[in-house]
Amino acid sequence: MIGAIAGDIIGSVFEAMPVKTKDFPLFQSQSRFTDDSVLIIAIGKAIIDKGSYLEYVKKIGRSYPHCGYGASFIRWLLSESTRSYYSFGNGAAMRVSPVGFAFESEEQVLQQAQKTAEITHNHPEGIKGAQAVALAVYLARHRYKQNEDTQHSCRRV
Image (cartoon, rainbow, N blue to C red; front, side, top):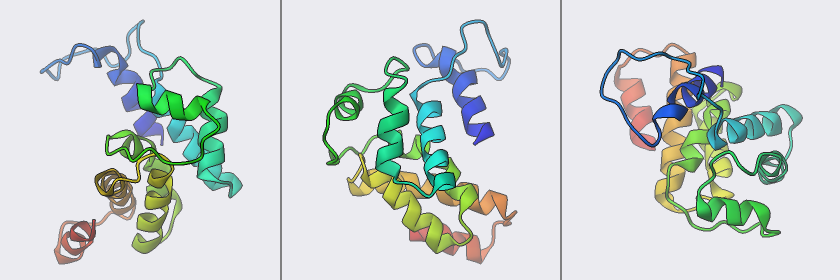
């Protein structure tokens, strides 16, 4: 979670103007957290509290309405709707890192990643994106080396 949030803050100044260099300051005066950090925290808090991903995303997300949400997401967030809007964007993948850290098996990680995605990104590609990121965090956490087992794991997504 910390790495994902740090990456969000570091990258925030480059969202509108990408750079192709490795030589840039990590934190700048314009650096800020974005919607990705807010939703990472919402997913992490839901896991810790054993709460509903949907409820925590709505509650915590609504506390920060001006942090850069996409148009479809902000409409959903501020509405009373609990239905997904079939997105296949990267939002579900951006918020899922706590799942890869919190659960103890590949199966749990994949199932929980799907649950976090489905609240908004119930398109198969949105779900696969979330599962891929969560599984990468899980595999890194368990210090897997690339071998046949990890290749098999990655083919599952």
